Image (cartoon, rainbow, N blue to C red; front, side, top):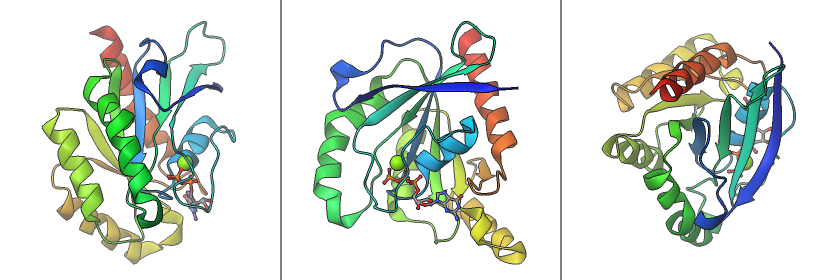
Length: 200
Ligand SMILES: Nc1nc2c(ncn2[C@@H]2O[C@H](COP(=O)(O)OP(=O)(O)OP(=O)(O)O)[C@@H](O)[C@H]2O)c(=O)[nH]1
Ligand SMILES: [Mg+2]
């Protein structure tokens, strides 16, 4: 099935978020973890800007995603600014207080938060804080272990086991934007949550 996706708008203020409509999927994670790359892999085009420079995405970028032939979007994707990068941490915490935190607290159509963690590095305190925050707020969420193409066989199984232990009870999808591993599984999760949200 062909996916059509388009950039809607970039918001760094509550006032500029798009009007709530279809279920929304938020992509969260440390700077450089691969949020924009996961979005691009899911939609199959270079929609979101990716970069080697951590902290590049500094606003919430909203994308409209629809199945070809359908009149209305299926979901919105929200690419959030990254956290945890020391060099720009002051600006990022200001962004967080000004519009990311309110977004996560208040957004009525937010159906699923994808907490991206790098499968190549040990569990990070900042990621744990995010997942705890989402759990405390009752926001449905799952972990996406990114860049798993960089790990082979045993190393990948070990990394996934370590993540499972660190984030007990949170579902995890191993993902690579490079090879497409995890793409179908992640779409299934997104669609399952989105159809439930739309039915309720
Ligand atoms: N090998 C590999 N590299 C990846 C993968 N996903 C992303 N990268 C690389 O990681 C870097 C960061 O990717 P982005 O998608 O820009 O990361 P981001 O989380 O959006 O970064 P910020 O917007 O700065 O927070 C880029 O150089 C990507 O090419 C992956 O699955 N495999
Ligand atoms: Mg980005």
